[in-house]
Length: 136
Image (cartoon, rainbow, N blue to C red; front, side, top):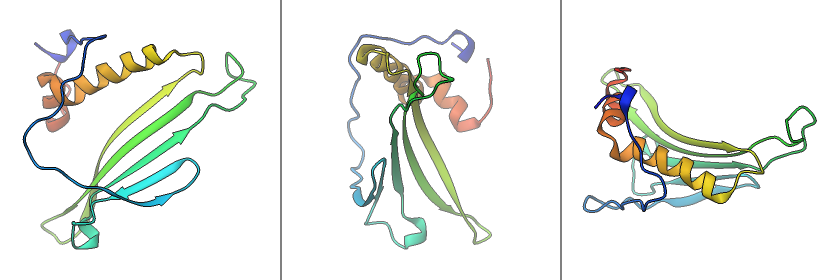
């Protein structure tokens, strides 16, 4: 199967991960719409993995179709990598969900189900993410 003919399941249950190692995150900062967590066990600090979670509620917006902006939630995982030349880069994986305030929880769940499958289950999309090649 290829990306251009991929399939997804909606309305089912999401399988959990088994095996592997547990990563423990600790909260290092919270504001009204943002939370930052780090893996405290990571040393040195320059290689510390972290998660940034941002939630933006809908706001009045006269230009929007229903008078409100879309609600947005962002979950960003950042994993620094020390390069052979001694410099550090921040590899990032991000899940962003935007939806109109009239969207039902079931509709949001369908969106989450499809993106979870693309990131973790579907071999074609995993291959695309790893290789950074769009092969339809």
